[in-house]
Image (cartoon, rainbow, N blue to C red):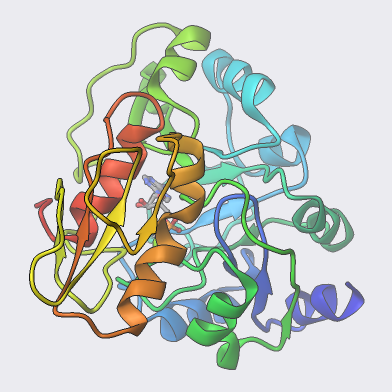
Length: 299
Ligand code: AMP
Ligand code: MG
């Protein structure tokens, strides 16, 4: 733990477990430290990073919250919801990709919160993969991707959620969904009412076309494996999958398994990876969003 905090203090990178995916973390206020993240990930600099803080009070030190933001924070923090709000102070320009807004979240993982509390300032922690690759959801996968760039690392076990946080913008008094995640659209609307439709990709610069992608080509909505393909199943009734995202058809289990199984399949260098259809309600919206991007279908 002290080595983790020391790494952040000295402007170095840290492999940090969260409940969503493993992060590659740095002091958000330190532009030189943040620059190391963009380099390690090969991440385009126009794609801003999420700042992680220990609680809602710390969030309001870096962001300006309106009533809707406070209600969402109250309802879902600590947890996998990120709020995009006007930047108040304390997060480097580079971490915000020059925007006057900031993305902030209070993670639910005990070790992540302990690090944040001990460090005492905002910490950026994008997924610990090289840009464009599937996010790591185990310590071993995180170390394989970017461990070489980190001065310290914490093993927090397998990530319980497995897909990245839901990103919601509260800018200009409007609440809109920038990225689906495990906090669902319906859960957000239950707190703040109907969401404003957003122009995807316009407001959230990080919504790149091919993202989360394995090396092998991905085929979606498959029910059998073609020659040389590895089939990932979902629910009963899919023809002989190698692995199943969830044999019982539970979207939570599928989200937690998604990136690990894509990586597992990819390691065998198959001709392709075929994935069974996952219903798009609830958490399925986030799973299908990741799958479509991993397949390169979203422009
Ligand atoms: P990642 O760190 O890869 O999980 O991605 C963070 C997500 O939050 C990306 O989709 C970013 O574009 C989005 N994001 C971060 N900061 C902002 C911001 N200030 N305005 C809009 N979207 C943001
Ligand atoms: Mg990522």
